[in-house]
Length: 63
Ligand code: SF4
Image 1 (cartoon, rainbow, N blue to C red):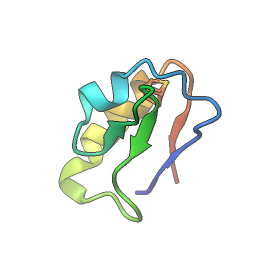
Image 2: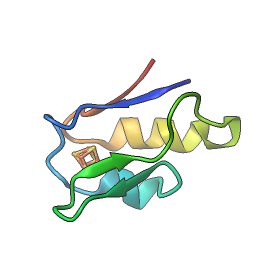
Image 3: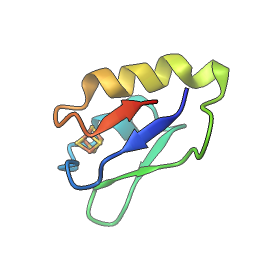
């Protein structure tokens, strides 16, 4: 599983980095920053799905 983040859609609600701080951080304006490049480690896949399911802007997806 890989994560993608559409920074155009992100509105900085912060759910992703609250729910999955191993995978997401934020910049100075609160916009999400993806911390993992490439494959998501197997033990973080559940957290990745939680973040995807809880982004109100549909800015996070998997591929
Ligand atoms: S949950 Fe979605 S909208 Fe909110 S900071 Fe994360 S990517 Fe951006």
